[in-house]
Each structure stands twice: as structure tokens, then as C-alpha cells.
Length: 431
Image (cartoon, rainbow, N blue to C red; front, top):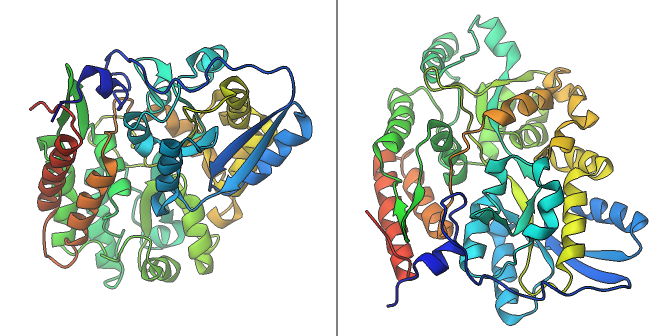
């Protein structure tokens, strides 16, 4: 098999890896028009339809048609990629940062660098690195998902347990929670691969990198082992629950005060609010515990508006995408509808982020996430075979609660599966 090296690796990810890009998704990049144009947009997030309606009310020359799909992980991405191969893809598509590399690798996006240049300073460099390669941009960032600690303020206060500022303190608090309430635990074991990635991200435990013309994979590195050993230790000591991720039993435990906290991304705010209604007003949010003295935060989620390679109106499509991520009305809508933390600087200045949240005891929780966003470790890079990586890691992590495997087993398995997937798809891999 011919190895996919520099030329195709560039189209496969490398955000900030310094690999030259060549010939990825030419589409109709130069097409212009003097009259009204129609731009189709595929996505699934709450509130996107309303943002499109707001745009269409004030931009008669560029009409955006929004079509809702199942979420990316539930066949939405498959439909996008299939349509791109058939030449029937829309101009715009909602693509999560974790999957953007896969779209680049497939060559289904087009370079819109010239169109985003005037507003490039609106977004942090690390965010641009999630939607492009070697400084080129193939989409516009919408949101980021810095992590924090959601916790039952009433229970911590009544038990006189301090909110932990470090992971060492978190372990101490975990033991204190069990001692104060033998049936309760501080948190549920993180077994979802993308949630778990946020802890690795914070710790600087990279999963992917690029060396010359080749990929490197380090999911089973010493740094990753440290993160895994931490959670394995809490589980072995019986200091965490082990409900399946996103399960009704976990939501019930949140409501009943059987699980006192959740260290998760900003979108956990709506997840907890919408699934643990009986504990409304009792929750609060604090900064994510730190590893030692390193003031770094993990990120778990975030998405972009990508421009597909066959879009005939990339300039107009990009104009809408930038407006969606920066316009005050649009951002206010997305904050209210999807509980996002805007990626743009203007979005972070949106007054909606200063609104007290009744569910969280009147705390303006998004102010905290706004303050934490600049502390996201900027050195994380996703790989081009995340579907294989996530499937293997998720399978391995799912065996931990039943003692059918350990975190280290899961990391080692994901390492092997990822290397196999890269090689099967023709990527050059370096040790």
C-alpha cells in the first residue's frame, strides 16, 4: 500500500504541526455572484435553526437553508461524508473539533483562509488549530468546552468539606464524602472516551502528534498512564460510582444527592440541569481541580461550521459562519439554546454570559467558564481516525466498572487499535 505521507497528512490534521498543505478540496473556491445565493447548512445543535432565521431576516442577498441531521456521532457525520463523496454535500456543515481531522483526511473541505483573515484575531490560535492545518482554515469555530467542577453546594457545606483545588485535594475530598455519607460518592467514574480526553488534555497527555511526514500515537504514554492510574485508584478504593456514562441512573443519583459532583465541560451545565431537576438551586460551579501547580484546564467538546469542498459560494458561506459565531443576537441565542461558551472574543463579551442561573443557586456560572477558557492547554491535537480510537477506548473504559479491565488496559488497547487504523488507511506512522 502506498503510504499517505506529507501531502495527504497535511490534509489529515496537523493543526500547528507545520506540515505543508497541498491540494485539499479545491471545490468552486473562486466562484462569485452578483445576485442572491442559496447556501445549505447541515447541523443538529439546539438553536442553530433560530440563528439561521435571524440571519435570513437581515441578509436578503444570502439565503441560508438549515437542514437538521442526527448528531454527528449518530450518523450525521456518515451522511456528510457520503454526500461529499457523491458531490451532493451542503456548503456548510457542523463538525466537532474531534472529528475535523477526519474530514480533512477525507479531503472534503475547502480552504477559506482568505475569507476569515479579517476576523482571524477574533479567535484564539489554539481554536483555529482545531479547524485547519499549517495556518490554513477550513471552517469557523463556534464554541469551546473548557471543563470545571459542578458540585452540590449544599452537601459539601453541610459536611464541611472544602471544594478541592487540586486533584490531590479531590482524592482527599472523595474519602471525606464517603465518610460523611457512606452511600454517597464524590463523582461518577469517567468512562466516556471524549469526556475522558478532557482529563488527558488538561494534563498535557497527548494522544496524537506529527513527526516529519508521519503520525505519532501516544495514548499509552507515561503521562496518559498517570491520568488513568488516578481514576483507577479512586475506583479501586471505592471512592467513585460506576454508572454508565449519560445514564438515567447517574442522573437520578445527582438528584438524590448520591453523587455530589461532576467534573465536566461547560455543556454539562445543561446536562445536569435538564436531567437532575429535583436538585435545582443546590448546585454550583468551581474551577476544575489542577494537576499540582500547573494552571491548565482541559477541554471536552466544541464545534465548528466547516465549508465543504464543493460549495460554490465559499465567500458567502464563510460570511454567514463568521456572523453566526460573532453576532450578538446569534451568540445570545446559542448560549440560551445550547449552553455554549462562544469561541470568539466578541462572543465571550456577550451579556448573556453574565446572567445568574437559578438552577445553580443564582451563580453566573458562565463567567467562570469565560475566565477559565484562556487556560485551556493549547497543545492538544486530534488524529484522523478518532472513530476507531474512541470506539476502542470506550470499549476498554466500559470494562473498568465490572473489573473486566483497567484504565491501563483501555489505553493500551486504544493505542493498538489506533495504530492499526492509521496503517489500514495508508497513513505513515512513526514510533
